[in-house]
Amino acid sequence: MDDDIKILQHIYERFNKRDIDAVLSALAEDVVWANGMDGGHVYGREAVREYWTRQWSMIDPHVEPVGFHRTADGAIIADVQQSVRDLQGQPLQGQKTVGHVFRFRDGKVARFDIRDAA
Image (cartoon, rainbow, N blue to C red):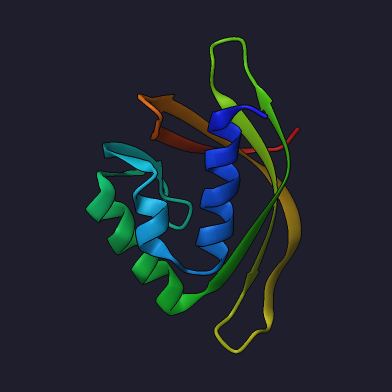
């Protein structure tokens, strides 16, 4: 299996366990990360930490990768089943599949974008 995909599997596992430091260690210092709540992007590891800390204070997201494929330009797309619950465990949206697009630089995630899975 591709080393980048192994890194992504680890990121998803640690994200779902809320192990933020383990996830951040797999990101480039100057990572560009999609802000799925407000739109746009956040920039840098500490901005990602703040984004997730805020997100997790309001909702309980869970993301489960169901497949990975590499694009012609080298990006990796993870097809992900996403579910979002409130902090009491009640579903806020039904489970849906989205595409997470990752770009690596020097073995770290340098950019993350979200797209609707087609």
